[in-house]
Image 1 (tube, rainbow, N blue to C red):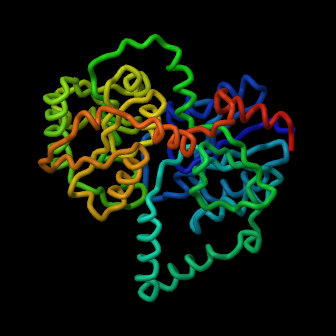
Image 2 (tube, rainbow, N blue to C red):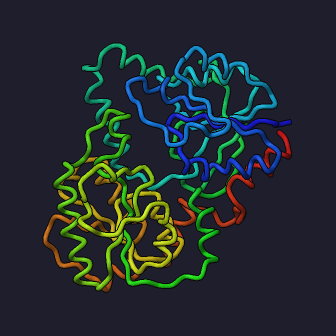
Image 3 (tube, helix red, strand yellow):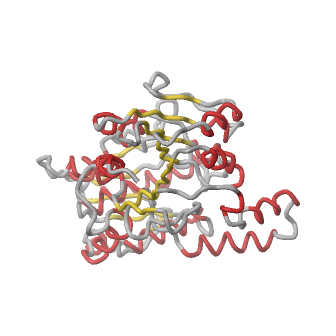
Length: 385
């Protein structure tokens, strides 16, 4: 019988995570809930200030050996929701879990479309660098091709799944792994928001992704796709064009990870709102964005989307992501740094067929329940294995 649920994280925990992980829902269902943050042990050179260090049940692991021992000693009354990716440098986490008696789930419910070009690009890079790789890098790559059972890794017990095309991640899965079809976490917010009386407003909502300042660039040692000043100059110019052509005021739905308090006024006086994305989209006439999962709200509330790209993104992963998600919305990307004639009549309409297909593929399958995400999880865990 499951008594304790442990969220195992590789990204710093926040107030937003506390809400979207349904901590209180799980506790109301009789489970003890803890959050074990492995970030310092997995990304030793990256540090970040916590937004809620006093959260009940939150443990931050700075010592790998201590974390390994705690994981190894979990019992059959423990259940782990594992957000740690399955890569060579994280295998010690899976090894420790495999020594324990606990079952564990992985999360595949917040996927977005990934272009075929991304997979091809990665394959080309591996082949191109195959003979120039350092021997240790090559060995790691080969090592991850070994079947997980030969590595002493036990398979995933549950996949918490969203839409039908959400299985984009590499995990140790067997024929006994159970797929629990739920929906995206955004759908929980939608369920609450859709019942609210909606005063339609002449606004266009920009779904901010904190480009190119997001902390994940430093965390994963990646170069931002564009220089800061250039990016916000492009945005301002395009927003002015949208306002002039449509009559809609452009407002900013801030990325949850954003911190604009200590930066210049990049949005040049435009209204910014944090934690209100669903409500803003619900009230809007148009949604502007790149490839954020928050575009789910545009789909659910049936709002037209303009997928914004620019020349600096060309031949980079971000360009392929934007192209792919635009395709699913029945559109093509708009290059905001280029002069072009935009067919506003076309852009301000939606294709119901495309929206239905996207919702089934990436948000929620037709037969999944209209219950809060973690209530569905709690109901399943109560039934036992």
